[in-house]
Image 1 (cartoon, rainbow, N blue to C red):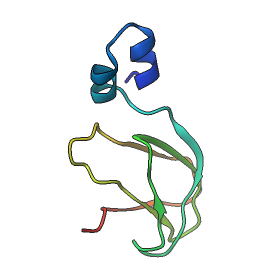
Image 2: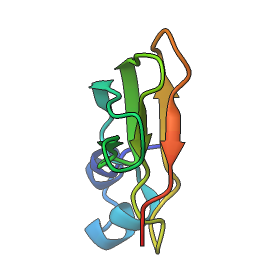
Image 3: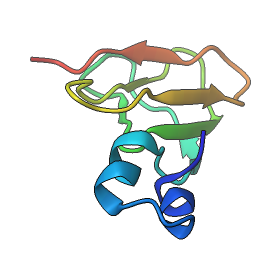
Amino acid sequence: MATKQELMAASAPAALANKLGQDAPAAALSAAGSDQSGATKITSSFSIFTTVAAGTGAVLPSAHAQPPYTVVNNGANPLLLYPVSG
């Protein structure tokens, strides 16, 4: 999927690019916490985790009217994913 910046560079209007495109990848993220309250907050629609200690995770943002989220785990352990609370 194209990023928002790539779509705008190809002359797509900003409003359309923001609806269709992904954020630029957030790379080299580290998982944290042993439960939802201490987990790393995901802030990009494309997140790459490279450091994942056993039992650590991340919290997905609210999916209300947002593009799909891609989460890549390149760490040594399973990445726990939690829904946003509330």
